[in-house]
Image (cartoon, rainbow, N blue to C red; front, top):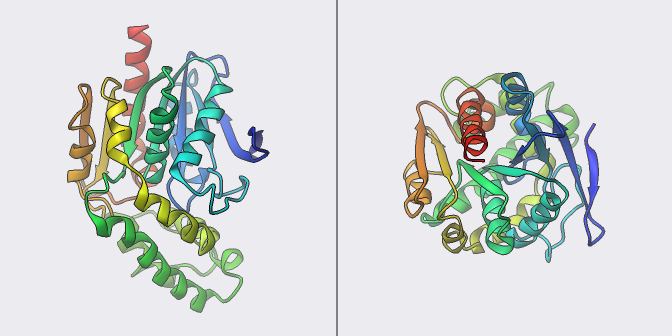
Length: 288
């Protein structure tokens, strides 16, 4: 059961913690648009198995999951970055931020607006540079069609019934759009549940913020922070070239394309992501 952390404006964030609470490095996992912390369950489990001394935090952004609902004024990357900065202020030690999709933009916003010196590493999964206009619009339009199909198949109690009756809806739509080759059926079901939970209110609130956000200015602040940008070869929302563009101005940046993987890397590629996260943690510990 997620715990709740209060913010200064009265909102609260739902989060889960794992690992050693006294660890010198904390890995903070930031989910994407219209999802929640559950997308990280494989990563959290594998991190714990590989190195139980690392502290891990995964939380729901404002307006997502079990956190406080957002309003038009608070459905912005800047506000989500402020929320993250406030959460980070309640932890100690060095930090590795791991953002998936919109979560990468939230991490950049927190760094750009608050310059937390303790951020010693940044991992951006399936994160767009904003260079392709249709990329930011593709998810809402496609998900809209998908959820309409889901509603027609499942009826009005879409969230409650999605696990029992999802296969027919997802075979041609969700799997093609968001996942790569041979996805795990449980991953498909979880993605469908998360999207259904956040459609249409969250999607409508946050879509304009994604369009407006200035990623380039935020990236300029991370020029000396190790940045790893990872994208799936089969990602239909974020082209592989975006990973290279994200690290092009970074002195310690690396771009990786994972063969056969789609947009949902926390689910599809946890086994490939976790060793890279732990590699960053190891570098931080060695550098002191």
